[in-house]
Length: 216
Image 1 (cartoon, rainbow, N blue to C red):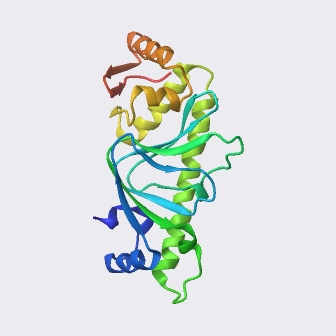
Image 2 (cartoon, rainbow, N blue to C red):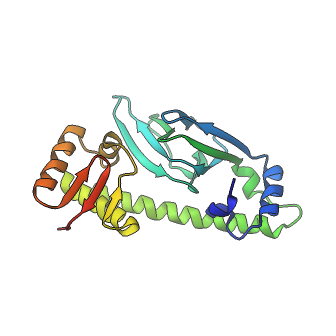
């Protein structure tokens, strides 16, 4: 397991990470695609760190409508203490999008004052604040997507974000169903819009492979 690839442990040696895992009482769990990683039912104190794989935070309202709130890749952190208030009583959970492994640490263990004033503990807290800042930026981008008026505008804005990260040719990090939930669109209507975008020469689409030809 390579902790050096996980941003939460940036600048912390492997030996120090090992000591911290014992100190924090970290646990590791593996999940199959489609399995529930955690359920935000209240009073959660665990922070999850994606060691590998992908997951999504979803919300199911009282009518059974599902919305994707966040996507998590390798190195991302999540947890009820880092999320938003769920005042409507909707079902909010993290679901594995692929086979994955997650490390769970008690949030209270991270934020408590270290009796030994360990430098690596301070670095971990600093890294966590950095990851929370990245999470804020990610949510800001999501708000920008949802602020677009049409399904085409939402798709193009999202595709531009992916193109900046991976180049003009990239693979969708989620299924078509999840993409519709992510941009809050009807799946059938979004599928028709994707076909229309191909016909208009905006994109090339082959299953989950997308090529952004031009943006308007």
